[in-house]
Length: 367
Image (cartoon, rainbow, N blue to C red; front, side, top):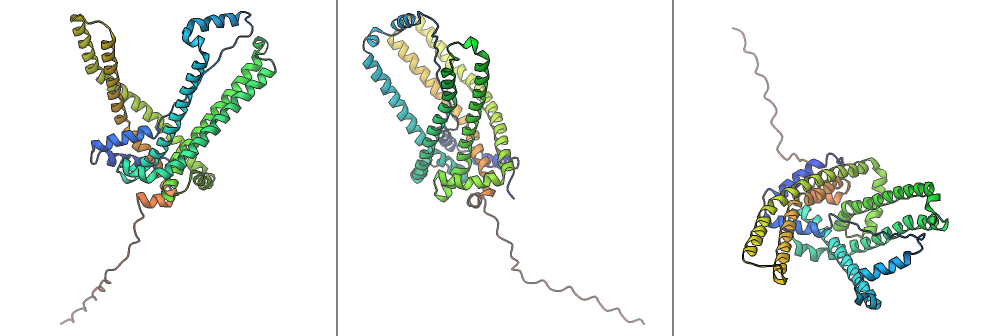
């Protein structure tokens, strides 16, 4: 019988404990921390906003003065060079984003193999999973483009419509319409973000195992997953709800542990920094290029140590959530069930038949 979302928690905890504690292998913790970080277990989104005030008659003059005050004269006199530099930074940023998306796609399969086999072998699995990772990479790129287009449509079309109606020109006269439209657009935007996050979770939890075990692409994996979702809406909805609850609990536990470790690390690193400042002040040292460079290097080293420890703390989370999805999905996906725990063979009775019970003794004659 398929496990429910609640029933899959216990075997996932047992799997995490057995893989990380019995036996404890520090090298595996380090490799899992590295894989979990590059697999994209956490993501952040950024944005920008623009302010425009057409009612101010002298806004353009103030803007020119502000630009002249903020930008160096070299940049204000060489706009072509500044534009080329900005374009170069944009291209480099996009290239790095694409590169890390590909790395995260391959690492997703390496993390799956590491949890299933309880062994984290990065180099071997990288060579074996490059093709599947590239297929997932293509899916991720298309999903990113579709997400960007959807966000533009959800935010851009209402804004363009409001601008055509003149709501932005006189907002005080249309404040009720602006507030109503803003609330509606905000709710639609939140629903869109939730839907995209749901697609991402379903892909890495239920499509990646199909791609890994049956050598198919993400589109075929989704084609096979959709009938299961329709046939068992309650089970998968319970899984999503339980995963949200577990994610909140894990985030709280990880945050508290990280703060505790940060406090512990601040004691030695802060003590060394304070001692260095006091000694340098007693020796008559001042802030110059050399001392600033030493301080920056020391801060970077402290940051690297903190991130390393934080990634080590996150290893149980990195293992538990893939294990949770695996144990939930395995009864619904026979190849995965056979891989993590094949069904025991049917018992066969090959022992010889037992001898019949002895007959009761005849009663002795009287006399």
